[in-house]
Length: 281
Ligand code: ATP
Image 1 (spheres, rainbow, N blue to C red):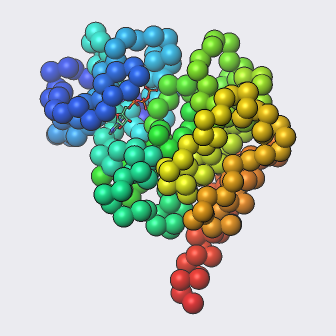
Image 2 (cartoon, protein in one colour):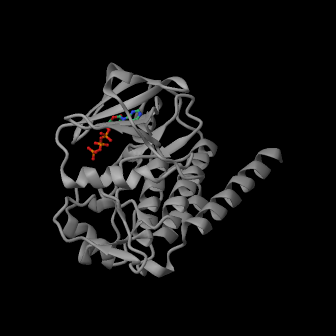
């Protein structure tokens, strides 16, 4: 991991190709960027419909970040509308991959590898004082060879000031509530601890193979009632017990009692070793 300075990109240096996605704020197009020194770089260009404050924040948040498991912002094109030039992840979203029945299901070892990578990216974000707030399988992208998982969609993330360990939302942004811990649902408090809760839900989505949404069909109020009554998402059928234990720990009612991302990486690696040993026997 290092720091990176995104470029100011000239629109004439971008050759736009086909549409690869459609988000709330705009369209995503595959493109070639003619880099002045490095030659042609394949990329994804997010062309924004408008540039509300939330998106300017997304751009500011992304620009200092550089990690192999975070979608890199290469630069921006200060055109109207604004273009964000991003690292291309041709494997698409992890959620779409899980649901894709035309391909074999990812192996448990593959999911575990993604989980370790995502925890690695989140550990980096945590160290940078950045709270993501929308970690979910739909916001994880895969590389073309499906070897790497990368965290994307910083629309909701906020940089924390050094004196703040959690961020209280002032504006009314729609909450991804099935991924949120009680303190976020009740008091709109977000922190790295709430990202850990969402990481647990993301793990659950992975081992559920996208066949069901977390807390399917429940309202925010109903989810909160269940959680406060001590209920948690149940173990997906094909999820090893050791991995379920890890997600379960992410759902501790007390934010400070949840594991941090460094602990999560170690625990996931232990499971990886156990599976490796089992396969050797
Ligand atoms: P938002 O909350 O900003 O609307 P979103 O996930 O709905 O988030 P985008 O981030 O704009 O929307 O992405 C829309 C789709 O475009 C994604 O679901 C994905 O399929 C595709 N996409 C986005 N970024 C990339 C990228 N860097 N590489 C490849 N495909 C991408």
